[in-house]
Image (cartoon, rainbow, N blue to C red):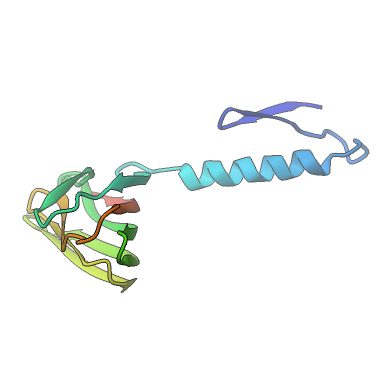
Length: 153
């Protein structure tokens, strides 16, 4: 059987339909291809990632989400927020649509849930958040996101 490597996983790929027990290798192959495709990012895109949110009411930059108007014309950010303490669980998921008009960035938001978080984008393309702090103890909160960008011309 030929060996195929996808994302560092070596797969014994069957080379004939008569190969015994070939279904496991095909399932492994399909699973690794799916992972590879989901992790693929284009120029200007932001790969999927998770950051821990800071439990205060100050504005915080999301370092991975800085868009250049010289490179990016617009972007769609897919996100989910989870916040929990010993008293409350808050969650939210949605999309942020970002567009650059040549001198400033604009943001619109659609989603479901309410995690008491506000997103904003500066004129330089830096995305940031502010939140209502959780009042309880054992606070756990994070945002997971990825962004697809449309590059200039």
